[in-house]
Amino acid sequence: MHPVRFTNMKKFLILIVIPFLPAANACAQNSDEINDPEKTEIWEPQPPVVEPVEVHGEPPEDAIILFDGTSLDGWEAMDGSDAGWILGDGYMTVEPGSGDIKTRQHFSDVQLHVEFRAPEEIDGEGQGRGNSGIFLQNRYEVQVLDNWENPTYSNGMNGSIYKQHIPLANPAKRPGEWQTYQIFFKSPVFGDDGEVEKPARVTVMLNGVLVQNNVEIFGNTVYIGAPFYEEHGPAGIRLQDHGDYVSYRNIWVRELDEEIRFKDGIWRDPQ
Ligand code: MG
Image 1 (tube, rainbow, N blue to C red):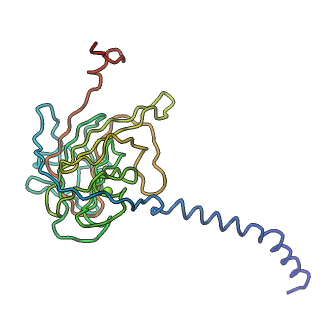
Image 2 (cartoon, rainbow, N blue to C red; image 1 turned 90 degrees about the horizontal axis):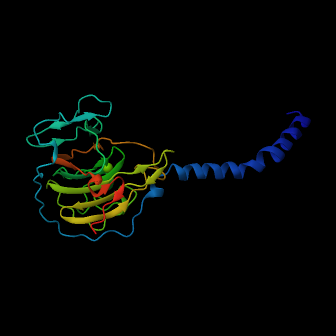
């Protein structure tokens, strides 16, 4: 190499490249951290195991039946085509790889009843065992997971608001047994500027045990990074295809009309 050129290259390295190396390295670390799903996992504390109880799931007279075990007509794939899940005798099962499905009908505030079952034969562990999910308004996931003697991060357990709220208890049933969610959901309110004015809130019972007590939802469920809100209106209830043969039955919803308690936007004071 020509001596002058060599000197120039050395100067280039010393003056231009080397000072930026630590910054470049820090940048790479930051972006690794941002892209790391483990950064939003919480493993401690683990909720106490509580014996589940039987819940009777008869729909009240004003309930809208979303799935009665005989037809997938009320459901569609995410692209609007027919739902590709397997219809069994009185239940439906995720067809792995066919994608999530959601109700054709859109909802705001609801009381929601869902029964689900993880495969009886245990296959996989942690998040890879009986994983599915119920996305309220197509965005906010109440996790469905086989948590019978299957540890995982607490804020990703059955009964969690995925990566937002740890469940208060773990009333898991054995794989292969039907379990029941009773969900009470208040949808978010957005201002004229599209910013969230009142965040969504949710209360969740799992197998007769309270697991979420009127918690605030922080935004769309995300696997990596922080949840965020995006303005939306009424939306479908989505069930997740996470690659496991999770089954569902007896799904119904009651629409909750808050206006009953208000007159012209003013709270009706019983006095
Ligand atoms: Mg899930």
